[in-house]
Length: 195
Image (cartoon, rainbow, N blue to C red; front, top):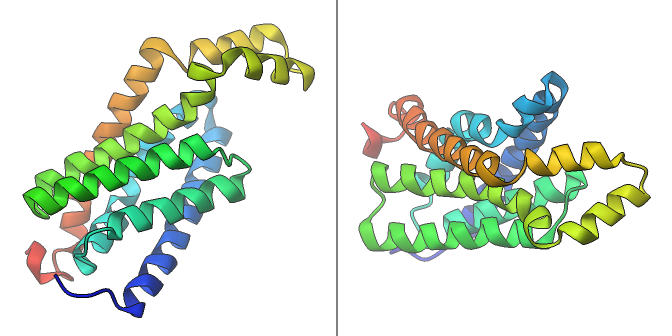
């Protein structure tokens, strides 16, 4: 494996910023369309942005590139969107690290990358549900104090846990999986190792 270069970090930084901004834009569009559509935004993001993830992994084939890229883009998205929640960013970044370990062990093959990015996208959904799964009482009290109606809070919790959470994670996984293969089609003219 070749040593890291400054240009690797610069490319990851630029692409992570682009990815983070696009995630915010897609999230904003889906929430404007319908709350149910917003629940599907990790899947939509996976499908549309899998190309960027594939480009990063193939252009910078070094251990940790995926972790760094996902960690920076997630922190940027969470910070700029006002949804900074350390367990969310940590869970997604830790999953990217595990995927980096798997890619290191099994190689940078398409099925490995597709499953890995699918896992990362599904953890986006799980990470967003951490406050509801582990700190529900505290958050319900905070939301009530902020003026939210208890019936709305209960509906939100019901639609963010249980089988809704499992379904959301499965759909997000599929979106990430599909996104990598769409990325392969888009990039095969630009990256010789994909042809």
